[in-house]
Length: 196
Image (cartoon, rainbow, N blue to C red; front, side, top):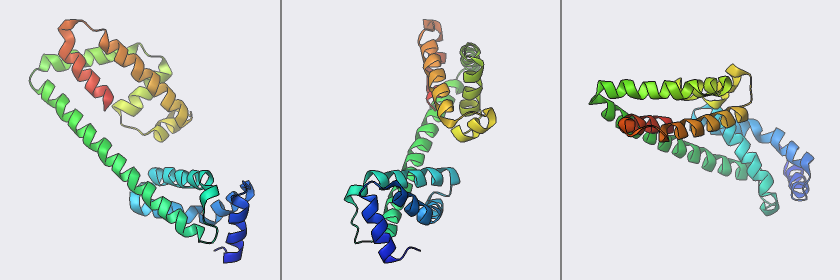
């Protein structure tokens, strides 16, 4: 733990844009912040994202930090708020996913032929993607892998995964839009699926 004098000196340097002071604060608190986020989110990947967000916020707000107060307390308040925000986001995504899956199930529960048409439409669209975009789409959308898991499997960065998936989604949505009127219901179902 940093002494009050050392912390005060680091904060004084931090507000003057000293990156070594930032690094010292990071080294001192990153483990505790990550552990705190992990206790709240119960997901190491989310906790690591929260950790990054907390220290990005520290750097962005460095000019407004009260140097007479403990930076640890400030970091943990930011960590708590960002962790709760991540939980809310996850809950909202889960609710949207469940509603969309229920809609898809309702659409296809009435007509087996419609289900088959939808899958043919999807397979046709996927087959037109480049090899790498197809792999990213299949891993993320069909197998439910995270960006991190997909990046590890394909030996690319998670940012590249995001770019490939975005491009694939744009292509597939455009493909769906240009389907004939006879496949409107399959198109609607596929569009809903792609949003999940």
